[in-house]
Length: 274
Ligand SMILES: C[S@@+](CC[C@H](N)C(=O)[O-])C[C@H]1O[C@@H](n2cnc3c(N)ncnc32)[C@H](O)[C@@H]1O
Image (cartoon, rainbow, N blue to C red; front, top):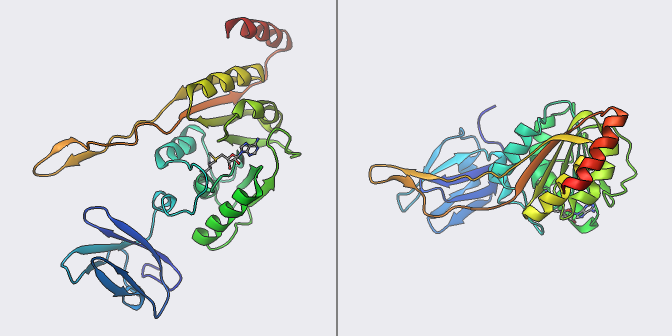
């Protein structure tokens, strides 16, 4: 099925990248400064169709990609950026069928990517301490996915003591104090499993890496993703003047099983090295 259906989301995009997200509803119309188009004129069209507005501007019709949805979420928290979500999926090795735990849920932006990556055979548990954010995130997921997926559950709790049963294959922490969740993460993550954390401040990274090492995580790596767009046209072949220069630092690590004596020795060395 390629043509647009009633109830679907459609992204209207100009050549210059300005876009609007619209849910198709028979009888309604969309208006902006460029003109107006009836939803009935979109329903039945193929994706990629071009609406030439009364002002002669080309507006193309697409199904929104996940990254397009992020900036249309209702949000009350900071949300994950596509560049960081992409790295979490890649370096966190989030694949179909995995059992994944995330905390906090926030506005549900990362949740959309995680649900897509684990597919219908995976399982995602999202732990959020503030019920109003959990409600908001569930509204966002329902609004864009059409329902609350069966493979997703939301737990209202402090991640430090979530009362959950593991093991999970992957744990993602997007929290102000992720080091406080290291103990629970260590208990809930299966050996060999991957943990990912996102923190805006390097002092947070220092604290979480220290705690993760103490809790049996190794192969820790921290990096940030700088995405710089470029103009490529007849006049310009240079970077765009502005960029989102900083979102957060990503840290990834693996839970390992250390031989008992070695674990004790490393604990002592850790204490002295930080
Ligand atoms: C930056 S937001 C998460 C954003 C989310 N990843 C997204 O993309 O929309 C951080 C969230 O962590 C929640 N939080 C903070 N401390 C927590 C804790 N100890 N346990 C559970 N949730 C917590 C906050 O209420 C907030 O909703």
